[in-house]
Length: 193
Ligand code: GAR
Image (cartoon, rainbow, N blue to C red; front, side):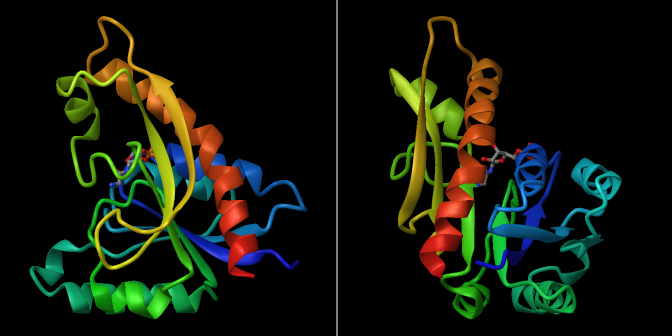
């Protein structure tokens, strides 16, 4: 299949985004990064993507205030300008409205740092630690209007070790995310056809 033009949406460091860009160096990989887009103009991941030759853009959410529809229309415009066919959310920390998700339904996936359906939303590592879980992990899932509730594409488990704190557990999960996301995105694109 021809690789789909895939926009990667980030808000921060973009280590998952880098894992996807690295995977896409394989000509057989079904996603071609066409854009790295951030809601945060200062996201360090933007410079990292640009250094790898991927087009970058930022749509700062702050001037839009509470008008999420207008923010998402601005996102849509940039996505379309870059010929986006598929979207991979990779540490994109804005909740997308039903309107945006509806327009892109079946073409947006996300990586979430928990074993969904456990711990939707924020602070997943702290919640796993305070629950005394023996295992934690990460999930790649389809994006649907309900937050972190779409069908699961792939999951990876890590142990919670004695003495773990949020930072040590988050680092272990993040390493698992880097291994999980590239094949999971490929699987999603092949599923989408
Ligand atoms: C990752 O752990 C990702 O799963 C999480 O943000 C981090 C981004 O790291 N995403 C969410 O929490 C989404 N709700 P990265 O910028 O280094 O890829």
